[in-house]
Amino acid sequence: MTAEELRKCYVGFFTERGHKEIASASLLPENDPTVLFTTAGMHPLVPYLLGEKHPLGRRLTDVQKCVRTCDIEEVGDDSHLTFFEMLGNWSLGDYFKEESISMSFDFLTKVLKVPVERLAVTAFEGDERVGKDIETAEIWKRKGLMDDQIFFYGAEENWWGPVGQTGPCGPDTEIFYDFGQDKCSDSCGPACHCGKYVEIWNNVFMEYKKEADKSLTELSQKNVDTGMGFERMLTICQGKTNVYDTELFTPVMERLQEILTEEHTEMSMHDKRVLCEHSRAMCFILGDDRHLVPSNTEQGYILRRLIRRMIRVLKKAGLDNDVLNVLADIIIEQYKDVYTELGRNGAFILEQLKKECDLFSKTLDGGLKKAESYLMELTTQMKRTVETKEKVEQSDDRQVSEEQTKIKMLSGSLAFKLYDTYGFPIEFTCELAKEKGCTVDLEGFETCFLEHQEKSRQGSEGKFKGGLADHSTQTARLHTATHLLHAALRQVLGEQVQQRGSNITAERLRFDFSYPVKVTKEELTRVEDIVNTAIAEKCDVIMTEMSVEEAKRKGAIGLFANKYGEQVKVYEIPGFSMEICGGPHAKNTGDLICFRILKEEASSAGVRRIKAVLEE
Image (cartoon, rainbow, N blue to C red; front, side, top):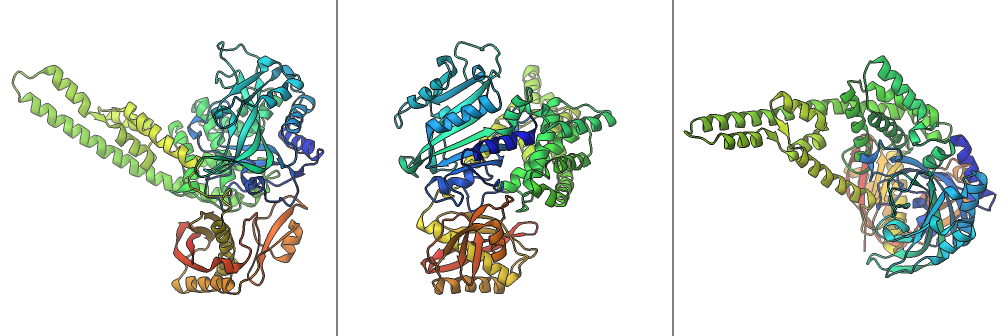
């Protein structure tokens, strides 16, 4: 089965069972500050999981682009990826456990022909909040699974969500493929990482909403959210043992090997995988229609980190940065028919990649100078110590030797500063230190590295409060204010202004938009006046469901879906704004009271940022 066949097979199975196909959402969440990237298929659907009506009904399915950044350093093994596709199906208050599990079981065993004996599943063992999920286990037994194929685990393994600090969540049942090898121990099960089991599907039974105080309240509707790992399932369908041997990676892996052969150089399999995986992730992030670029903050920082990690791998192998453009070309060509934005934005991807490579080359030069200055200081200190000790009669030779060793060791914190600030690979630091007769405190470096990794993980898992799960009155007002701000900017600065991202909490809005120069004070005043005029006129905010084609004809703005005939929600403020959006919104512009811009600044090259509030 090919990759495209698996995508079509999955979506077709669920559309035959009453699900409507929806388009993959942007990798950059709109109006949601809780995460940096779209991390799962359910992420854009949070308002509907909380009870808002979806224009296409209560049964949905899709193939969603996702990026998860918490395991970047794990990339290079058989299964960890930063970018991946997720096959999903949802019930928004329609079917629940029995039908969800039955459909998953039928798709795996009847369509993909996975032997029942190769399946293993898990269920929630319960805690002080929610009881043991016996119902799920009994459903699996009725499907033919034996007791030794069903495992119970706690919340760490079998409780999903919310995406941010608050939102829909609930117990889940995870489905694993058993590769058939012997158990590594008597306690070996799906939670074990020995390689016997690999997770392929997760069915989440969303019955609860986690509140800000960490308490659970029951949702007004019981939902099902499922996600199947597309790359992992394709690996199994194609009889492979790792994702890099599937058709998703073989074109770029083979071209990389050709380059290595031509250049007569060696590269570890781990580094080959990092290059190819990060190249794919980088192409999809840069290829997003919102035109994110590398920067030192948030999503831009993750993008920069991926590119610079690839450059380090190339430098270690003695290869030129142009290799990245070669790999990017292959990935764009491979995916442009499935994800048309990669074709549209191909030139932008290559342009930004070259800019970042050129910038990082200069940064590495600065790192080299800084590293040499650190090591020069060490050798100077070492020389002074030796000279001082030689003057001391009856000196303790052993003590001199110990002090020399301490002095000629570059601290872990400085080595990490070279790595983090200047992008200087630790391998390069060690080689340079050796040339100067010094060593590097690798344990100290590892400690700093792990601390940084943990901070990054925490940041990527939930950076801010609020988000799509926040349906407070103030957040709804700020969503409406964002639409008015967007319209006002286009009126004052021109229609070349396009939204590049937004971030809304209960306290303020942040809006990124394309514009090449700083917005003047006079222009900002005009923008403020237009928004406040709309507020003063107390216009009703009108929501209408219509097709994408009709929305285009009516002049609505927003990121249009690629699926022909898809229904969308269009929010109109008559005379001021018309945008495709999922909400929530104020009912009347008069509810906004007063709009004030706090700050206008550069976000990245060609992108400006406005921060604003609503005042009583």
